[in-house]
Length: 309
Image (cartoon, rainbow, N blue to C red; front, top):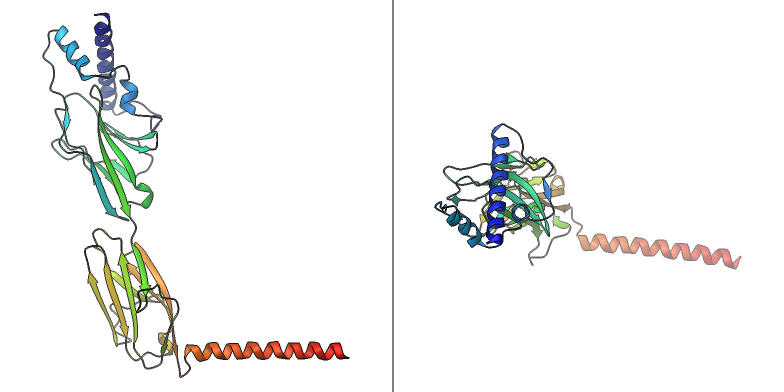
């Protein structure tokens, strides 16, 4: 009996604590400044004496009151994958919230970092904000997601014991490659004057491709180029990425330079193109080898002559 009375007193203190925090929030202040980074579960810290649901129910029975319906989440735990730079909404739909408070925290190992508490935002990162959706969705908004935002997020309700819904967020970083005819990443590309330049760009690891693939020659966009002429771009979008091909007919020396393939402003890659007049890359390499060999022989001959003297 003594244990039940002690439990009842602790429950009353906890409800008073929560009511006080709501009053502070309604007056425009932040109830608990300095709690942005918590060492462990925020609500477990507040309600550590409580471990079983029946304790709350016992208190309600002893006082002769009708137990309030326990809050619950409409959605189960979830896994979300988004593209780098996307705007993300993490949903938290709660039924029977009554006078309880909802908070969002981010888990890093054993540490929890407070993001929101009630209607207040505590994160120093301005990309995080509470964007509630009527009637009962305490959703968290993250703008311009980065790879570092991947991790575990928890929506917590100040019930007894605490209710926690977990969201695993994965931010996918697109991979952009210019490949050769064998699918290997291309190094420098060599073409004879008068031939057709053909470059293939493969974009992968994109869960929902919405951005456009663009081609650049130096600082000049080629997709909509009308001055050079003879340029065409064909892009095929797939479920997980895209394949884009650039064609430049009747290549000349002015077409040499760096060519870039980019997925919007998220990811890009570059390859160097060389247009040769008559001489092929193999001949250039052989010529360089012959020049190096001649220099070596001349140096050796001069050294030998000086020794013999």
